[in-house]
Amino acid sequence: MKIAVYPGSFDPITNGHLDILKRALAVFDKVIVLVAYNKDKKCVFSVNERIEMIKDAVKELKNVEVDSTDGLTLAYAKKAKACCLVRGLRAVTDFEYEFKMAEANHYIDKSIEEVFFMSNSEYSFISSSMVNELHLSGVKIDSLVPASVIKAYKNK
Ligand code: ADP
Image (tube, rainbow, N blue to C red; front, top):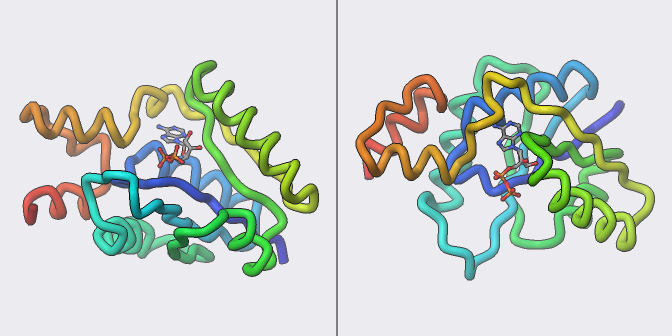
């Protein structure tokens, strides 16, 4: 059974994240979407809000779990018996950051591979921070995020 962990801030989850998740599900038997948080990092949504939005967005998908950690993603992956970490690449700018992270992860534990999926051009401009900014400016973001995120903004 090939298990992958898809870690991120997911503040909030976007249709770009969901596209990467669906594609990872075609390759792995199970994907754990992992909200990796740091208590000192300011986020728009709480960890619980982020988890609830993700759970709602993936409710129709099979073989997905949603969890969170404030520790090392690799330690979580090892405990979950995952073989790989999944990450998405939107542009060259993502590559530099991801390349460094992958090297650091490899330094910590060589037994867990990182697998990268290229963003679909339709979603390549979407990021959580972009979505938050657009929402704050009153721009309609219905086609960029799942319905659970729109609901969560309304409840804020
Ligand atoms: P982090 O704070 O760890 O970068 P994010 O929640 O912003 O977490 O993103 C998690 C992962 O999803 C990253 O690998 C990021 O590059 C990828 N990702 C985010 N948005 C998109 C998108 N629109 N298309 C493809 N990959 C994406």
